[in-house]
Structure formats: C-alpha cells, structure tokens
Amino acid sequence: MYNNIEQIKVFYPLQTWENNQILRKKSENVDIFDEDIKDFSEILLDLMYAYDWVGLAAPQVGKNVRIIATTQWKKVKKWNKTDKKIIWETAMINPEIIEHSEEKRKWEEACLSVPGLCGDVERWIWIVVKYQDKKWKTHTQKYSWFSAVVIQHEMDHLEWILFTDKVIWKIRKIKD
Image (cartoon, rainbow, N blue to C red):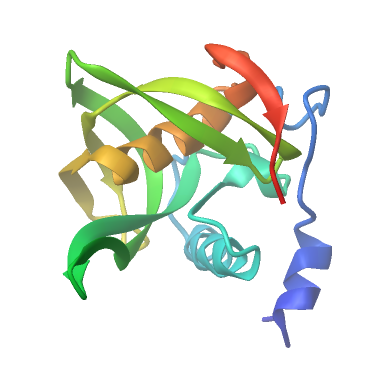
C-alpha cells in the first residue's frame, strides 16, 4: 500500500494539542471488520514504532475509531539490575476494561499529541481488557503495571480524554 513510513505519516498526520477537533471527539466502535480495518491496525502499529512510542490511538492519526496499538513490557534481570523489555505488541479493536484493581499508582506520563509536556496521572495497577485483534478474534487479557498504564492512556484517547485532563500534579516541560 505504501512505499515507506514517511508516506504513511503524510496520509495519517499526527494530531496534536487540546483543542483539536479529532482528539476531542469520542471514537466510534468498529462494527464491520474488513481489509481496511485490518490494514489500518497494522499501520497504527507501524506508526507507533516510527514515532518511537509505546502506544498510539487511532484518533491521534486522524481516525475516530476504537483501535489502539500498544506494546507490552516485562521486567527482566540483566547484569544484576532490573530492566524492561518489549515482549509483544498488540492492535486492540474495540477495547474495553472489564475489571481493574482497586489500588492506583501515580505515573509520570507524556503524549505524542501533547508534545513537550508531562505530568503525573493516577492509573489502576492492573486491568482486564476485552478486545478483538486484527483477525477479529476476541481476547480477554490481564495487564499490569506499565503495560496497564499504556493501555489506559491510549483508551482515554478513544473517549476524547488527554492525559492533561487527568494530571494530579502540575504539568511540566519534559527535561531534555
């Protein structure tokens, strides 16, 4: 379909800032699974990596449909220290949180759609998400810690919510 990622970025430009009409509109459920939805799910994953980010939601690239791309992380022990490693990626179609922890934790978040800023947001430490994959197969999966935070952040985009709407401690500039 596309020769390179730069062409994809032109066709699906990154949407930014709080008053953006696309980012501030609730996304529609995907009711018909076809090749366009499958292709777009793959494009969303490609764009997530092209922007060197851990998650991306369809509204961030101009489509108000309920699809997110995320990476899942695992803590691994390397050379006597704990590190994080990507263990898989997922395009989630029509994701919904069906269960979550009572406990929340504060996380520092940033967003491609709000460049240069970060802030502390409270998120559940684990969630159970029901979603369909690119082959329309339904999954129910538990995610915890960083993976759960990424999914919650991206799902907020589907509800027209930016992390800046949920900041519990001041918004600040990202340190270079």
